[in-house]
Image 1 (cartoon, helix red, strand yellow):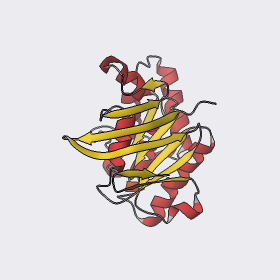
Image 2 (cartoon, rainbow, N blue to C red; image 1 turned 45 degrees about the vertical axis):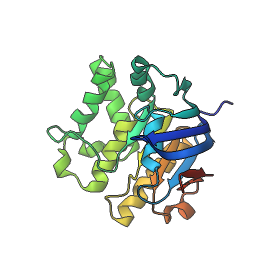
Image 3 (cartoon, helix red, strand yellow; image 1 turned 90 degrees about the horizontal axis):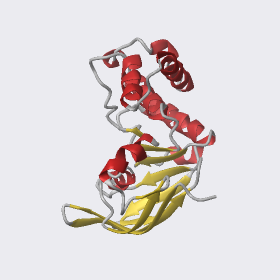
Image 4 (cartoon, rainbow, N blue to C red; image 1 turned 135 degrees about the vertical axis):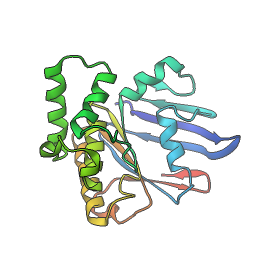
Length: 220
């Protein structure tokens, strides 16, 4: 089976400077991977390159069938629809309920049937244990609850890949562990997950492949 992410001799730049070089790794369907390293080591840059936010400076990178070094601007939205993204700072729309946050994404990505929209929102909220909180506004939810809504949002369009950038960074340890457990469970259902973190305490309990950002390289 073809890997869903495949990087060969990739180099990434930010403002003319090399952030990472000689990146070589692949990811299979349903694989759970930790991306570890200090703040500023290039973790976020690598994740952003996967959804074409940062261009590939050199080498070959393929994500979900798209060759990133050749990707056209008009293809990028289609790539991003296949990827779920979980941010550290949630990025929920603060003026609408959890349900409306999810509905907004579905409508924006072409869903039209109200019954299908409601059904899909119910499915993803059930999956993250938040079905009874759908009517609440973001400010009425705890940090852990907001992050569960963000994971639900990432699942909406049945992604093959979830990129989680420090998803536990703003949470207390117990809540953070629950979020990692949720992501781990998602990977066991067939969606690959890459989770950037500098917290190594999760690795023993929720094992996965480890990729380390260090000295501008990825050590697998």
